[in-house]
Structure formats: C-alpha cells, structure tokens
Image (cartoon, rainbow over all chains, first blue to last red; front, top):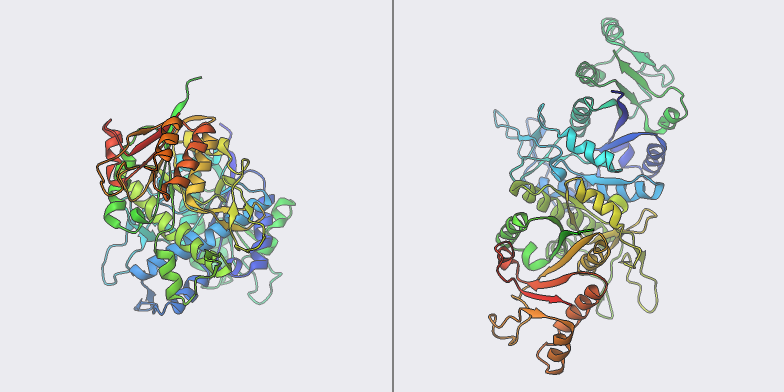
Length: 265
Length: 265
C-alpha cells in the first residue's frame, strides 16, 4: 500500500504573537500540497490576560502550575481566541480548517499528571494510546484540515493543558502508521546551525550517525539537545522526517528548495 | 430516497449557566438516537468577563454592539470556554462531539451587517447561501456530532457574532434537504402554554391553522409570537417539525413520551 503524504506543522509564540509572521505562515501552510495538520502553542496572550485579570502565575520549584483559573484562561485563549482566529485566516486563504482541542472527536485523550513532589494541576500527559489516528484520518479524508491547540481531555469531562510540541510529536508518531508523515517544528532559528552566531550555517541533513558525531564535537548546543533527542525518537517510532526551521522559510518547501534542518534515518 | 433523521437542538443561558441543568441536558442529548447537532448561545459568562475586564457593554438605541473588544471576549467565551467544556462533557457521556464556529469547515459564512442607522459592529447576518449543508453532512457521516457556538465568519478572515437561534434555524432549513430534520429550542417554559401561569397547560401540537386560531383568540402572548413566526417559516422551508420545550424534559423524547410543544404542517 502506498502511503499518502502528511505534514504536521507546529508553530509557537514567535509566529502567533506577530500578526505579520502569522499571516505569511498561514499563506505558506495553505500552499503546501497533501494532507496537513497544524498544531499551535499559546503565545503571550494568555499571560497578558492573566495579568489583566490579576491572576498571579503559580510556580512551584520554577515550574508553571495549571490551576483552575489558569485552565479557564488557556481554554479561552488557546481554544477560543487564537485557534478560531487562525481557522478564520486559514479559510480566507482556502484551507478548509477545523479548530480542535484533543477533546473534540476524542482525538487526544490524556491522563492528568500524577502528583509526586509537585502538583502540576490540570496538565495532561500523552501516552501511546492517547491519539485516535483512525478518527483523525476520517476527518482528513472528509476534506478537513485539523488545527490543534495545546488542550486535551481525560475522557471524563476534564480539559487538560498539554505541551504543543508533545502533541505535535504524538500526532506524528501515531499517524505515521497511516500516512508518510513529516513533522515540522517552526522555531526562531533557520535550523540547526554549525555556528550558533551564523544564521547561514544551517546543517541541512542530519541522520542518527551524524547526530552522534555533532554531539561528540559539541557542535549542537545544549538547548537543542532535547529537541533533537525527541525528534530522533519520533523517527525511530515511524515518522519519516522531522524538520526544524523558521516559519519565514516555509515557502521554500513548496518550491522544492531546502527548508531548515531535516532529520531522518 | 429515505431521509435519515436529524435533531438540531439549541440551548441558551438557562441551560448553560446552570451546571446541573447542563449536565442533565448533555446526558439526555447523548441518549437521543440518530444524527444530532447542538447549538449553544452565550450565557452570563461573557457579560461577567466583560465586567471583570472593565469593558462597558456598548449599546446604541438599546441594541447591543459587538465592538472589537466584545468580539474578542465572545470568541474566548463562546468559542473556547463554553464550547470546549460542553465538548469535554459530551465526550464523557459518549457523544463524539466536535466544537465549532461557523468558520470551522467554512460551515456558516455570513455577511457583516451593513451600517444603516446603527453600526452593530462585528455581527454576521445569515442568508440562504450561508450554510454548507454538504460539508456538515460529511462531518455527520464521518461519525461526529457538531456543537456550534454563536460565531460565524465572513470568509475573509473575520469572525462575526451571530444569534444562536438564527444559526439553529438556518442549519435546520439547510440540512432539511438532506435529512428529516427536527429543530428543538430549549427555553425556560415547558412549551407553549394555554395559560401562561399554568406550567401544565402545554399545547402539545400546533399546525399553521391552529396557530392562526391561537393568535386570533390571543392565547399566544406577545413574547412567543416572533419565536412561532420563525418556527413556521422554517417548517414552510422544509423542516419537519419545530419543538419548543424545557431542557429538563428532553429525556421524554427518547422515551417516546410527549416533549414540549410540537409545531408542524
């Protein structure tokens, strides 16, 4: 059976918080052929709304806690304001998007993080059975483009806050059984750089052997390590490639030119 | 061709603002057989959030105006907070709901109300071409239950505020070409009453001739008239029946007992 191509693209604050970046990204996203899924994080708006409402960010040991009030705010901002405005913009460009949380369609069911030393509050952890890939495939095949925000549910009526990078990765791994899946992370740099201070020193391709070499030579700086570890774990679990790049350059993909850094087997 | 049955049920503040009412309604909604669509209005939460944020409701000649700030709030509250919590609850009961605005799937495209004497702001008016019944049918047939909030879009990137009663009616009329459609309005009374002060004096069935008679005898009070006018207009446009009743009694439908007042040809 020949697999159909699927691109899963994750954007964060540096795209969402800048209306010009967002406009160009959504236009380039629309231009990409084949099945597509968008995953977006939160950006600054949730923090701003919390401040306006006088809700102090709750931190324990430097980790942010999702209490009842914070969950209300992220449900409004991620699930409502950001998600539905992205959908309306995508429709304008001709992408038939549907804005989703993991509760919609029961697409991503998670478990509330158990309390050990820290109670993270209403945070949902993804596991191997979280994503209903068959149900998402039905939506894709019915002609719709899912746009997921960083919310999931526990199946028992509770919405939960879940990291958008993790959602994107879990979707990619799960859907790689049905589609030839490429996972793209848009971030602030043009890719993995040979020289952190030189934006043009993009390493175009990295395979697991190359990754080991780059780690040994300490070319990959510490902040990139967890990103790349997770990427190669997704590839080992069936994702065809993980691409890390800047949203400005996404148009290059459509034009067949190199975009960001491509990690693959 | 035999049509499949579809129920479109609209709930407003008296269900949404009361967690016990909402719980029972969503349970009874789940128990109904066949294709279903939920439409919900706003409730008190948007007003409360506006007040907390110090945004004055903007009224012109007693009519509420949806300015930029108000649109932001209803997008957060209707599209995020209320809609996604309803979806999570429906999932808990086993309804595979997807929470939607009219922008999602391009399902309901409206036109910003033109400025005549009053500028209503970001309000979208529905016309005969607004609802994409084929696209909604694809979603229903893929196994999902749409839950619409009171937001639409103009197709050019702009979300718009649209009355939930009007959305429910437009969905019913449009989908009646594909399904045997019953439209149910849940409101604070048990139905159309012979005696406004007697909750048990429900008129069970009204046809157009009976409606004329009730109007002549002035049994139907003024507040009900526009509701019933719109209902009979929907029936004249193909909707099989419009039922008006109290959400508490929705379970009766499932049990084959009479529920509210049934308007039909």
